[in-house]
Length: 77
Image (cartoon, rainbow, N blue to C red; front, side, top):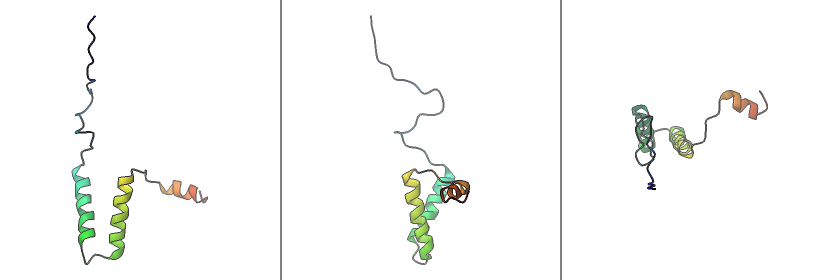
């Protein structure tokens, strides 16, 4: 009896590159916009703060809440 381990092949879609997710053009453009805001010395401080918060939020992977979910958490739903 000859048993040999084989790799499972994906049946749907292309194989991921090293487990990383490929960004779409829209995501790349938005990333470039955030970088421009962060590096612009004349940008308003609030814009810079929002860009930083957005990057942290995206990196954390936490889901975004809908207005209804926020209102329910505040007890106003």
